[in-house]
Image (cartoon, rainbow, N blue to C red; front, side, top):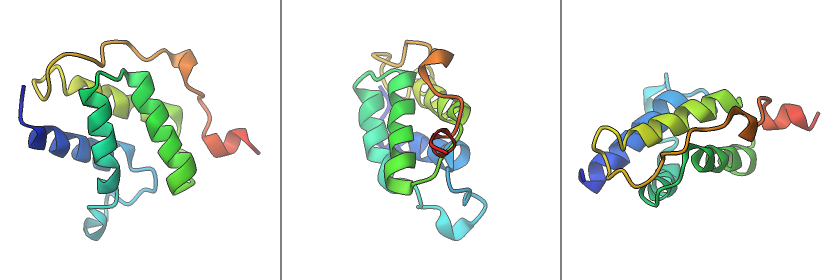
Length: 115
């Protein structure tokens, strides 16, 4: 098992580079924009959450905290990368083993669904 700090850094990088629901990752001054969401995602990964659970958590953040919608396929990619961290020794392989079922997530943005 790799150090907690490495897992935190990897999740932070994935959220910044791949999730970026408000589109600020090209602004260096906004680098810490998603840092407050990292600890919860790390806890999910460490607890063995699968890709679907991580994706739903990100969707909740988008809808409740940020109030924007990001397509489900982007959440799926982020969840897959968070889970793939286990394959590269970031944490022990205790979770994130279930493939994300495309039917388990809505292919529309949360806001578009409500229009």
